[in-house]
Length: 158
Image (cartoon, helix red, strand yellow):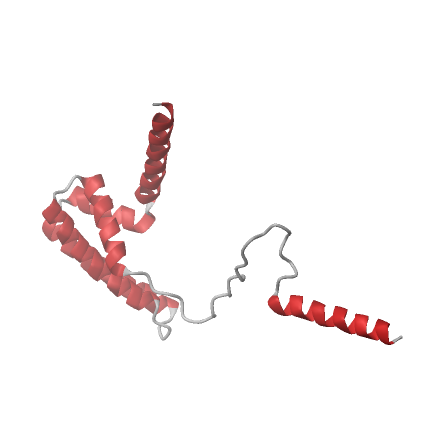
């Protein structure tokens, strides 16, 4: 009788140990253990990096518009200021939706006015359309992926 109790106690302690280590669901042959990712704390969403965003967009516009390095840097500066204002407006919890929309429209007009000082009307129109709809960036990423695949295929064959 005591043997059964000792056996049950050892079995119970052994299962507690496995559960405590959270190793009960690891498949056989799995070498390492990494705990599952914790869900992000519900709080303020992370703001995008306006410096990186403006640099990426300026490079994209350089390719689309065929502008030189100086114009690209001027555009990057304008984009950085515009994105900083947009992020500040978008992530302000005190503003209502209508207020945000009005402030964003004001910032868009400032951005457009600044662009018209340096770029042609056609270039400004392309930039504003891209900022509003953003199709060229997606198309460029797809084209880049296709080119990489072609290069890989050529490298494998050659």
